[in-house]
Length: 417
Image 1 (cartoon, rainbow, N blue to C red):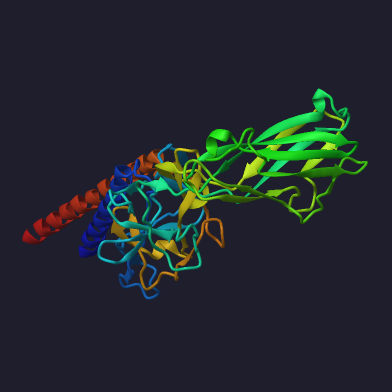
Image 2 (image 1 turned 180 degrees about the horizontal axis):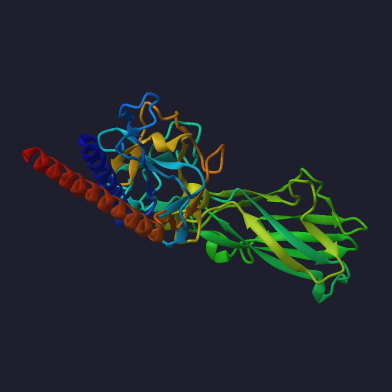
């Protein structure tokens, strides 16, 4: 008779613990990156009630096993600059205040006053910081520290290119035989100067060019300002540039700048990397199709955001973006073996496979979506169904206890008589 009591009590304990698991899941249905726990029931070792072959066996329920189901949660855009969601396998790396490494799927990060990227619990987020503009993802991950203010240092123009077509049908000496296009360059102080490149047709397949700078930008401009570079461009019968030949860029030097900046030596690249001329002479109106230069103006820092693939980019008032960091991801072969450290983070145990750390989208690691968060994997309908099942199980086992108690009382009454 005592077996019924112990079996029922084990069932009460098991179902009560299962209800605890459900309550924990429901409490975290809105927790970003939360992975729902699932319950597995097991029976205790049975004991025989005297049957020779053990056919009459009874046994209770063991304490149920609760494990995390690391399935993918829905990824929802938030538009917040420090939010990030993992699509696929992997965990963000954290460094807790006690120095222990931890892992999380929750990407709702924050930035403190000193530029440290932190989890909501205050743990440092790990990855790689840019050093002199270079991010070395082969180095060991470290706490990410981002700029929170400042001015981007200007970078003087060293080279520029123009993609221009000159009208092949222009008549020498006519209005359409002269064409001018602007080219903006940056000096060492970050000041911009608009150069003017003027093309004048001198013969069939031949155009003279001259480059001038605004008089107001020069300390001794002359009247009119002297060209800072000049020469001749020649084209073949197909309208392609032949002279100067490929590998002979035009040297342009802007001297005596009125703002006190250093002289500005530049290279005008007439050909692209494949050796194709960027200036053509076809039967179309002269036009400037595109231009580019490598100078960077001084600019105010305006903010930082996590982009796709976990890149952290600083933005500046001139519209430029500069990569200043990279989030790291860890791939863990058996994540269910990790221990829950609280605050939606996990730690490795002796049974956990060694985490492999690298950049998103490499190896078996998933991708990162910036400005988004992964929702909890809790299915409220499923949890309510489980809750009803466990509640009925608890009630059934409690009924066994009361029934067994009645049986015992009846037996004692018979003995008493």
